[in-house]
Image (cartoon, rainbow, N blue to C red):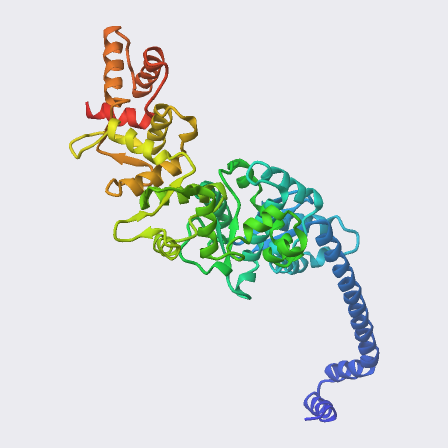
Amino acid sequence: MNQNDIILELREKYKQNTYILQKLDNYITNLPGLLKNLEDDYNKRNARKEELTKERDVFMENFLAENQYYYIPQTEIFLFYNKLHYRRISEDDIVHKILQTISSDEKGLNTWKYKIKTSMIKIIKDTPLHKSIPESETIQFVLSNLYPNTFKSKNHTKYFLTIIGDSILKKEEKDDKLIFIADPSFKEFLNYFSQQIYSCFGKNFTDMIKLKYYDHVYDQCRILDIVDPRTNHDFIKNNILDILSVCCHYSRRYESSDNFLKSHCYDITLNDTALFLKTNTAENIVAKFIQEFTTNDDKNMTYRNVYFLWREFLKKNNLPCIISQSNFKQQLQQMKIYDSDKDICLNIKSKMPSHWETFSKFWSQNIVINDNIDDVFEIDELTSLFNKWVKNSKLHINEEQFKETINWMYPDIGVENERYIYNISCKLWDKQNHIDLALNAMKTQKENSFNNLDSYKYYCKYVKKYYDGNYIVSKKYFEDYIEKL
């Protein structure tokens, strides 16, 4: 039905109603003016909308430039960067800041503030941490706290951070995946660092770093020259976002960890160490060991002693155990040094002091292992006992060396949780007897003990007085023992 038919139908319908017909005529007569007003209002609204859209875009651009927000989608964490530090921030705080800024704006955006808020939150959620560019102050803050505390130089620090950045940006998926091998002493730092990364991303980006060599292809292996790093837990925990932003920044800047070594690092020692396996073979590594650590002799060495000497060679060169024992023996056989039938190495002797021989004497003279012995020693306690017992300070060893020696020389002895050895006694330190003596002295002197802590404090004073403070058991050991009494 067209418009004329509608009007005719209305006139026919209301032909007996003068009032309605008069109204109809008035509407038709005034319709051009009414439509003109509607058109003007429509144009004004469009013009205002276009103006507000431009103002909105300018506002959003300026706001996000002045307030750097980022988002980690894996853990739904919002971040704020104040051009020095990245810190977590709640979505509510961001929304409040947006609405507050809009309300104080004089461009008339207040009516659109909730739409603007929604759009800006969406933009922030599409802005991940790795797209940020940390300021120079942030970069230097990270570097100055990791070097020299953890890493040997700034180049060592940059190399490590680039490796982590490559992992976060998944660059290893584009090429052959590299394996980075570090000394076991890096374990504490690496574990804590990994925990903090996981708290941010809900994922571990340090899987490519290994503390042991497992027959990886040499060409894909890189050595992380990190030995006995000090772990500043507070710095890592409080500034992990700063660290990760710098990691991603270096990965983008240097393209990859290998390219950092190739084009941006002029530390020859770092390059040689990192690329040691890439540029060497098992044959020439073992040959270098034999040349540097042994000399010709008319006597023979047991394979066990040669293997310990090999471990010393690795430590001297800051290398992990990069050759399996079977491969190591194979290399020695090819050099006509190893006799597999007798398990000896022919016509060589060591140029270095042999701490494992001293260790064997220490163990046989002072340690008793028996299932009937109800006692436990920690590795650090046994290491201290050995180092105080040995006369030559050059033969001192650390806890990792102690565990390695135990595992190699006494494989039947289990080290629980890499820390405890049970059913053991030591002639140099009768732990339980010292506690008994202290408790008896406390009773004799009518010292009142209200709790385990008071008793432990008395025990510590007793040992310091009568045993020069040597060998004090841990509070947990003390409490566990007196609970059995």
